[in-house]
View 1 (tube, helix red, strand yellow):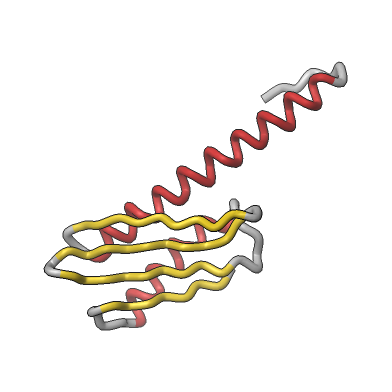
View 2 (view 1 turned 45 degrees about the vertical axis):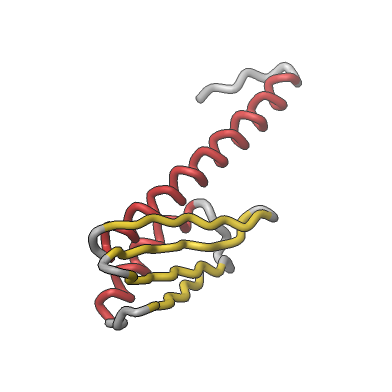
Length: 109
């Protein structure tokens, strides 16, 4: 996965970049290795906001959050992304298991 980080009204640092890239790696189990993830970090009137944008399964996703600090807003946006992708994966798994069980095979979870 490739991660591009954009700063708006904030200074970038290697520590912040490394932190964000390491946390975004959690999305690896849901996305393909060639996925491109855009992380937009913004400070506006003492409110930090984060948007995480990527493309998955013919759909574009965008998750955003605000917080009192940069790491809170980023963590909240990433948690939203993981929840949504996890739900999508569970639904797909249930559909596949349902089809497979229609052929007379029992599926155990």
